[in-house]
Amino acid sequence: MSRGYIIPDRAEIERSVRLAGEYECAFEYNDFYLPEILDNLGKQEEIIEFYAKYRSDFSQDTMHGAFLDVTIHSSDPLIRETSILRVRQSMEIAKRMGLKGVVFHTGRLAGFRTKSYLKLWHQINLQFFSQLAEAYPQQQIYMENMFDEAPDVLAELAEAMREIGNFGVCLDYAHAALTGCTQQEWVNTLAPYVLHMHLNDNDLLNDLHQPIGEGKIDWQEYDRLMKERQISAGVLVEVSGCDGQQKSLEYMRQHEMYPFHR
Image (cartoon, rainbow, N blue to C red; front, side, top):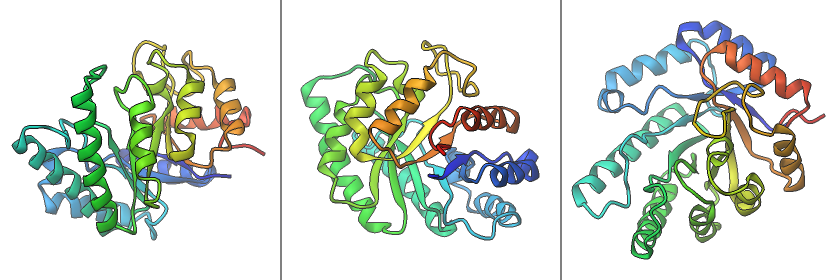
């Protein structure tokens, strides 16, 4: 079984640990993306020390990197400089913890497909993330579709970086469900590059982060697509709180959904 992931809840950490053990999941940390944490080394160490009481090894865990207002490809050098700082701060935390990987967003303006804009996005991200992957060879870097209206732009970047072993796509299946493209198009286009995934449910209109099985996403189609394209990525159940995570994981297990295939 490919590894599943849950977001640990520090307020219910012992339950998070039990849940991870029961469903053979690793952790994806959502504690480090806020600016006030990125700029506070003391707070970072406090959080890391907290988790170290319950984790003897972080090497299979991942984290969500900075994404709020992060625009690596900005034509404004000040915005670009700050965005690069935030990404590098995220990678430094992952390196200190010895994490497996870090998730970042594409940062694109939704639906804005001017050729000059897309060209700049591609060129700057290709250069920057190629250098970043080389600088942090022990960590995988996952780029997630956020407000992207189609998979083609992310696929073009991933193809250009295909020879870089520690860079790949984080396919957010719920985000993809909110676009005008079919789930099949998203999966077929990005399948060669997917190293990580985010799953939750929604009403096909809003990004609700509902427990899996409580919204309108067709999970039978999801499982079929995973089998057809032989996806072997780690899967985060991106639902907050242990109750929602357990509902999601149990739904996936009972329906033998990827990554719970028998």
